[in-house]
Length: 239
Ligand SMILES: [Zn+2]
Image (tube, rainbow, N blue to C red; front, side, top):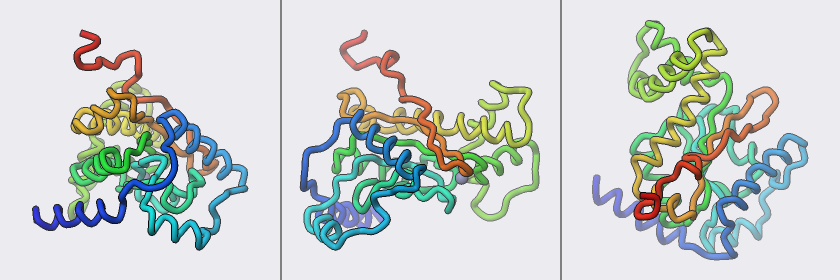
């Protein structure tokens, strides 16, 4: 298993060697995905077709994605379309409920460490089935089959936070509150559990932002940065 992982990373290093162009800073990267979502909302996207030239350049010169997006597997949240980004422009990690387990975080670490990607977007969405399942499970609903409980259990802390913060909410309102809590908890998890991510944030080379997409309107609402810059305790500086 270990040798397979090492050979996979080697392959990625060869095929993803840094190549062309100056990299955006974290704020420029955030502006790029925000304006991409506005283009998507306007119906006038730039990336409906992929040019032969772009495909060949990205194949030969490697990838320089503007952002890592951790999003849900839900087919209604196609990340490249939502942010109107083209081939080789976003490094996408998708898993139901946009949770951040070991494999997801390792993928993110690869993007931060080896591709110097300056932005992570934790993208939740409205009407998320995985979050709904976690809410139902917390309410004592029917047992889930197969491996699904392992996934839903990762969202349980967000449901607990939503219930504590909004004891009056029920049904879809509670699901939405849990989806919001989930993107923040996931952002906290990736920051807390990864030295690579944490060091890049401390060095101002990386921003983590939480965001939520409304399925009906398509709009992505950016909720803010994690951790808030004012609360950052930079090792050796703020103490
Ligand atoms: Zn979902």
